[in-house]
Length: 403
Picture 1 (cartoon, rainbow, N blue to C red):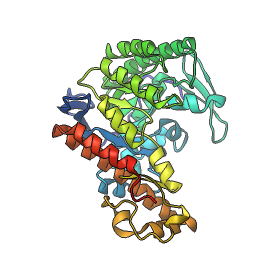
Picture 2: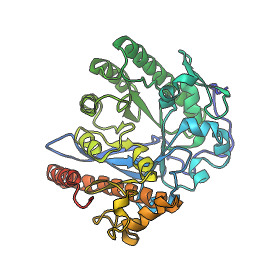
Picture 3: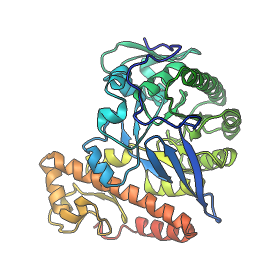
């Protein structure tokens, strides 16, 4: 059973780089604001370096981005990855990762890592869990073994993993949900956030190198409930704020409107993280509404199935029509896959079931998204975000060269 403890044991420190005395575990600086929208360029400083925002974080669920080596992600200039608390606490276990020097040493990654809290599994494992005020009890999807995840336990686990930024345990509801269900869930999330924050304070006082901690705004599709949650969280000294409970089935237009409402209530000097969003047009819209950070499994998951992102839209490279296509995946991309291989070759790899096809497709889709975020940041800094957005969206929607 995963239960809260009063302080961590004292083996190898979870972070190879300790903060200076009196410094917070993470710091955020606004570098530029677009005058015509809410778009922002910022810098999130962690123990493992600077993260330029807006930023897309590839998902490394099991302390790995599927099919790709850390060196390849560094070559794409990826500055931060996401790790999954639920999966790592089951395999190999937080203590095992700690004994290996923390998640950075364990996976050979020298840059920043953000972890979720396990709260999304409260939604995705609905048939295997029970929610109580103390926390969540659930059966492992691997072997059926019983576990308990509490707000304090989530902080312990993420601290043992040695991440740079961790999330409060939250309850992410299904969609649709009634207002009464959503209110009860939101209020529980707030209480859990307070407990997690207090537990981190105790760990820090005991001498642990604690990660930065974000509170998560919940409230489903009910704007007043989300506003009430935001007000409670903003009153506490979180290092940043996440927007949760969105992109779980509600219309995208509604999700964007709710995210925009959330950011208007959050402090300008703290980072804002929209969880689980990763399509190019959604990213651009959310950045325009003041969001700084994103993650999503969709770009790499789709790539492993043969659908890649390009500057002209989505390309299903495994389709037969590309069997004799000599062009790269994206003529505007300079990644290794596009510099070296044709659509015909990558389509061949998928047709014969070679792993290299998944690797090249994943590499390209991340190169596209990370490059898009850097280009968007440069436009914000240069005061040209509106012009950049019109040009990007027109080209992305064009579908040119995909037939």
